[in-house]
Length: 92
Image (cartoon, rainbow, N blue to C red; front, side):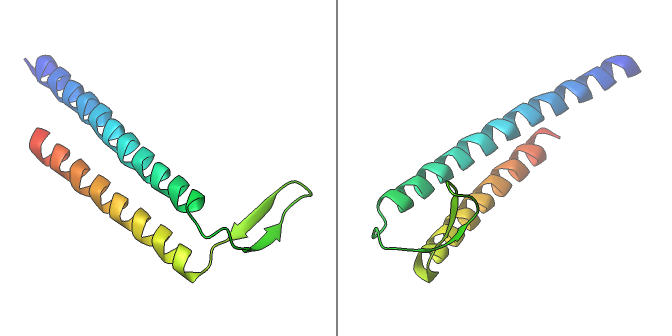
């Protein structure tokens, strides 16, 4: 009897893990698409950058772009956290 209860708990944890992983993937994939569009739809102005190698530059966003990125990451992090908390609360 204890074995079957333990099996059910392990199975529930696997399902929760799979669901939360799926939620996180979908949410952050949507976030990545928004970041991509922020970059594509930017004002194509010159940014400051750090030259890492001859072929690699790390661009530094200006204040407005930084705030767009910050708000996007914050929003999707909150959505992911709320959905994960809901799944855990509902299935434990």
